[in-house]
Image 1 (cartoon, helix red, strand yellow):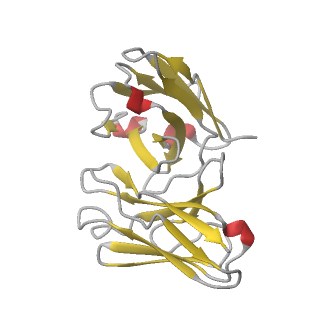
Image 2 (image 1 turned 180 degrees about the vertical axis):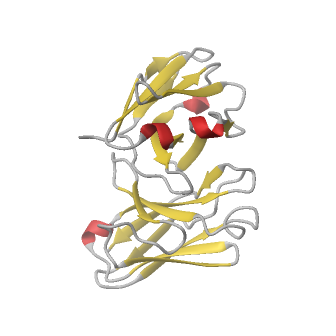
Length: 110
Length: 121
């Protein structure tokens, strides 16, 4: 199972919006609405930010939103803040009953 | 209270074995599917494998990269999951996290703080 493809880095200025893509295949991202997104600060454990493509867990800012089109899922961060600077990973359930993560994206707030 | 706590990491030589533990608290461990996910330094997350609950016969599944070398088990009486790692390679060097998915869900939450495994001679 190949890792889902994410851009290595995305940057934006405070207040701007950025979007991180997560591209897979019809056997994972495109086949199920089971995409989730995780935020990870240096030396810390991942934190769930979005589940089932579009849903936000309680306590996660509404500046974070998710979507999907075909084999590509996206995470959008609006009103970018300094605290959003972190590593972001997507994940998807797969047709073999396993899971696959994305290659990861480093978000930099300029 | 920290929901998941990993232990057992350390330095091991190539070809050696190591067993990690993941102690759970504060949620219904016995009904959960438990997963192991690893992250090499500077790299992305990699799903390692999972063990389902008793109702699903404790079924296990593994990533191709570890199949046949790693084994996941659980002890519901101790709210603990395990990752037995054999025939370790230098490429297995990573921080290993445990996490869970609830029945019917496909997202990982919560996560442990991670255990560092270093495979080196």
